[in-house]
Amino acid sequence: MPRSSRLKIKESSIDASCVVFDKDGTLIDFHKIWGPRLMRGTDKLVRELSLSNKFYDHLYRALGFDDKTGVTDGQGPLATAPLDQFATIVANVVFQHGISWDSACELTDDFMVSEMTAGPRPEELIPRGNIKQSLSRLYDAGLTLTVATTDNRLATQSALDALRIDHFFSEIRCGDDVGPVKPDVAVLESIATGQRCRIDQIVMVGDTVSDLMMAKNAGAKCCVGILGGAGSADQLLGFADFLIEDIGEIQPDF
Image (cartoon, rainbow, N blue to C red; front, side):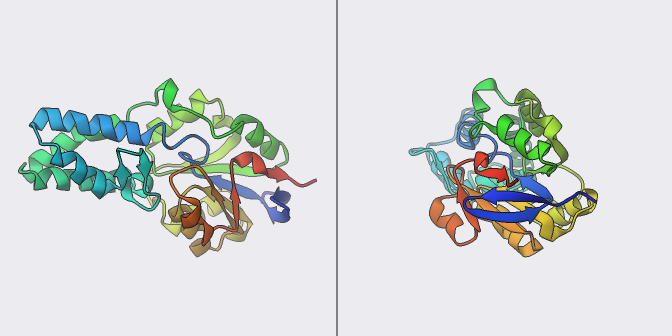
C-alpha cells in the first residue's frame, strides 16, 4: 500500500497518498483546445450541409459555449460530457435542422467527432503553470499521481507524451475506456483499488463542479478547484475545499 505523505495546500497541511488530476483546464489550458475545435467542427458541418447561421447558435447553446466571448459553461456538456454524450447532442441538433437521424449520426462522426478527437496540435498544449516541475516535486515526495479525464485515450496519451509528463502518472483513466467514466464515483473507486489506497487518501484536482462533486460523493480526502479552466470561481466555490491558480500550489509538506 502506498505510504501517506503530507501535502501543503494554501496554509493547510493534509495527509494523502494519491492525487488525481483532471487534464484539460487543470494540467493544460482548456480554452486553447475545445472552443476552437468546436468552432472548426461546426464550420465543417455547416459547409457540408449548407446550414443557416441559426445552426451555430443552436449548437453552441446546446453544448454550453459562447462563440462571441470564447467562454465555456463549466457545468455544460462541452466542459464535462464524455465523447459519446457530446456526439449525441451534436447529432440531435443536426437532426433538428432537417437531416435524418442516421445521416446526422454519420455526419457528426465524420465532421465533428473527428475534429474533437484529433491528436493535439502544438499550439493547443499550453501548460497551466510549470506542471513538469510541480508534478516532479510531488512524485519525488512519494505521492501516487493519476489522471482522470473525459477526453479519449489517444488524444490524452499524445498530450501527456508531448508535454513529457506521462512518466509521472501511475494510472490514466479516459472517457473512451471500458467501464465507468467521469463523473461516476466508480472512477475514483477504481483508481483507489488499482493504486491500493483508500478513497479518503485521495486528493482530486479539477476545474469543474463535476470533478469536485465526483470526489465529494466518493468520499475523497479533499477537493481542489483550479481557477482559469472551464468552471468559474463562483461555480467552484461551493464545492472546493481549496481554490488554486495552478497545481504548483500543491506541495509536499516536509
